[in-house]
Image 1 (cartoon, rainbow, N blue to C red):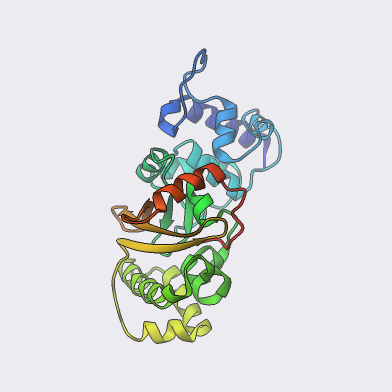
Image 2: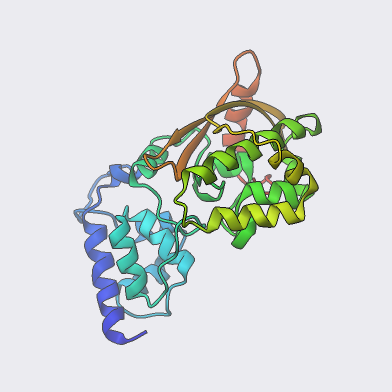
Length: 286
């Protein structure tokens, strides 16, 4: 990447950092703050980068940032879709298409996610690709940040990777399969007729999974708006939760959050999960 674009990249990051208040991203203002917006180390923390690496980016030096890092910076700095695309171009990276793990997260979804610090929550696409998770969600469901390609969709993993089903008790698998297929049909129909992402995914699943093909032939249609789920956590065992969904206006993204099911001991288990953190999460990614 040319030095001029490195310099502009650093200047752009500084300008976006300066406009964000700590409270906007769930951070305490704290005493003796001398900068109007976020500190460099705070942006680095939010993006999952080292402070030294982020400092190099703002200085217009260092290596070319990866597409994953650009996506993380865009989320940390609450960039608009246009600003996110501009950042990709400054970094000399192709602007990603909608639907993948690097998709731009709706700012309103990010804001709500920030305001749920102790509740497991994540933003996914309509094809069940996880875009961003808070720490309780990683502790409950596993870390999805490293998944790429077709595997990024949990629906795809559900029908092609048996290990992905370990998150649910075996008795619940048929109901989950049926719900996923009905939701996928509704999501695909809602997309533009020229969209190829959903069609490619459906074609791949029809070829790979006899179970999916049989359920697809039943033509059931139903968005997943709320569910009561039983989840198998590798350290805590069975946790019963309510899974609630908030849809973006275009239906392409959803904020999912998990609350303890009434009449169970799940509230205590979720509290314990917050104490355990992510260290004992060894199960398959959701």
